[in-house]
Image (cartoon, rainbow, N blue to C red):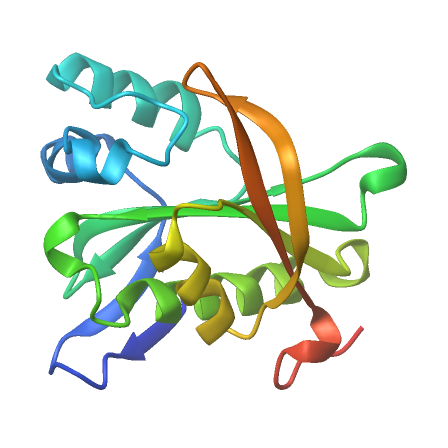
Length: 183
């Protein structure tokens, strides 16, 4: 059963579920927004075909990518990518949310739901979920902190992102940090 949570600021219900091809028009609301794409590895999608391509070739095949839904309507997406080999005990979280829903606690709730779900689904295979956040993305840093992640440090000039070498802040959460999580 998909995780579900009532947003304390609204009467709406927040759920996570797989993205579907029929979600393309909702996806385009946030995927075409420059404010949302600013700290994402992709540029704003300008064509519906780009959204369809993302859903069909990236979202559906991804082991853990979900739509963040408000009353059943997708308003963002969240994913956890599990590492492999010697790093198999770790996964990395990423998320985006339509601009009009920023600052309402929705992303924080979605992150909490996703972390709990992947720890439950992947069991002892996953011990740690990490989030790498651009040093200028203060809003996303707050999301992870409010979701119970620990700020571990600054990774200077860690990644080339949209043509610039960027500093990133590393956050993590362990199963033992999550209520009712047992490994």
